[in-house]
Image 1 (cartoon, helix red, strand yellow):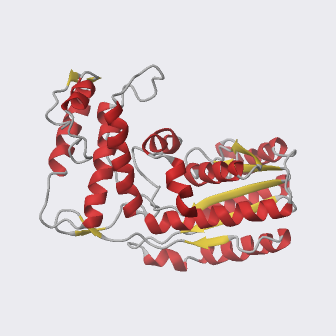
Image 2: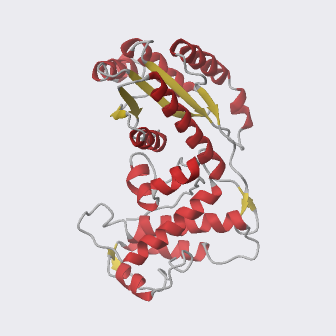
Length: 328
């Protein structure tokens, strides 16, 4: 794994090998080391994907027991190796991250132009963590006062099944009363979920303060989703709200994933959203672990554009102390 990531120093492998692992994690490491062996029919994007998978495998197997331990000390070569994995992410997902950066730059410029004093970004820990984190960092770097407000919105809309999304939205509205603007930005395929959230929030937050931004993605395996009636309804509704607030475009269409050759066959990333589904980055861990791989300043502020990133599903397992062979 470290060789794939350009880190040949055996001392790094020895240091990581000293971390006790569960047996299943060891088996996962061995399995992925075999999967990522060189292949004659692997193109440039396939190589980029392999770098990410190597980094992800290290995090979900070797580093899994210690990644949240603030006292854990890692060898310096590990940071360089994970940066190489991040570079692979950038290369494969460049177009979608360019779209995210442009969205963030436009939004922040608009907020500055409006002279807003306090802005709330609604974050769902199982959803929009990456775009919210980026927009918050960008806004703060431009001198804006921005706070991330976690909203654990349930999918339930029936009172008999427990707390509803409307009840949760009422709490969210009360918690954000002191803000000049409340931003709801999230990824959408059909738009059904986003519409439900927007409809629940618009009254508690207020039409004069709620800015919805729908990030529309395409699934190459399900082209019919782009024609879903809810998607058209979503665009119409958010644009009407954007017009009310004076925001120029409340829906942003992102380009689809690029196919790549990994083991001879053309492959498509498993998630339509490049920062989407993965065992490494599921939910709140999107930031906790992905940003351990990524220097955000290099990702998002390099000439004002991002170079992008991908990811793939790794099956993390819950011990044996591993040898250095599979690490190197």
